[in-house]
Image 1 (cartoon, rainbow, N blue to C red):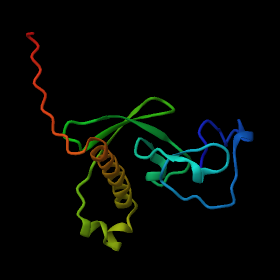
Image 2: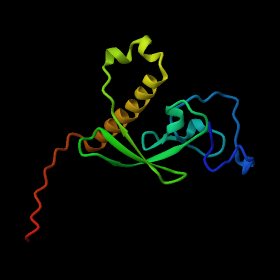
Image 3: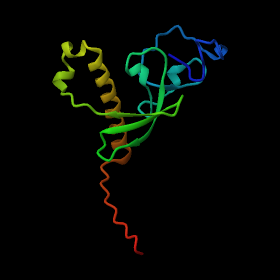
Image 4: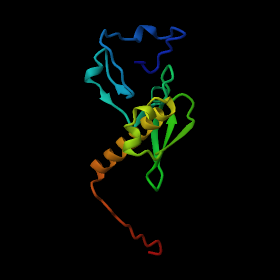
Length: 142
């Protein structure tokens, strides 16, 4: 678990690091105060740690900024350099995703991680918006 704003390599702000003896293995980004992450708020999929999803070391946090019209592509902006990352849902059947042979390859598990983030965002949108299907007629001539 990495705390934002702390450069652990350079030992800058190291006094801000909190330690817990319990293991916290997660792909999520948690907002918490003190050392009790169990009382935190899960920010995923609004904030993603791309390095956790791609099995890289360290934290590289990006925040949701936009969704494509077809709802299968999401755009995130990285906290550190403001660069953009587009995440697009990859077609994977449930049968393929459950195959242990398919899951043996890192690239496939990475696809599954990003697809899971997109599915979570779509679920949240449905929960907030319900089944709203609004067509807006805007008359700009008035």
